[in-house]
Image (cartoon, rainbow, N blue to C red; front, top):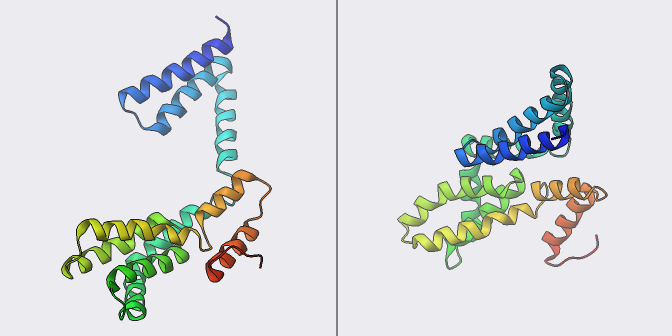
Amino acid sequence: MDAASLAALIMFGGAIFLLIVGAPIGISIGLPSFAAMVSILPMAGATTTAAQRMFTGLDSFALLAIPFFILAGNIMNNGGIAIRLINCSRIVTGYFPGALAQTNVVSNMLFGSISGSGVASAAAIGGIMNPIQKKEGYDSAFRTAVNIASAPTGMLIPPSNTLIVYATVAGSVSISALFMGGICQDFSGEAVLC
């Protein structure tokens, strides 16, 4: 068996074995890949190559924004901004039928547009709105559906993790052009050129 076939067997066999055993995905991919590199290269070369590849994979300025958006969402939630956004939304929507459901939608929109993450918005606003809606007599399936359906609205409003990832993967798409498209879509109600 040649070196390339042995490396492929180590990589795929090791990954499948570790996944079946229940190891985390990062370890199931990383450990067999490093073992396959060691089978082809000397230890010093394999270590250097692994370090260079890991740094190259992490060296994406646009993808660094995503953890910082999630951090901003957690800071806002712990700092009390989420409850202030809910109170502001409640003032705006308090006179309409189904006011708490509409408050949930507006709060998710505001929180998602600030944090850039639909998941952070669903967790922050849902955690605060769920007990309030339960106290007001809203059905649990309805309040869950409203929170889940309204949390992704923040992903369309810049800054947005989805737009950043799309622009990074597509390569030739401008992030600022996507943000302008999101702003034009949100304020006009339809897709127009700004």
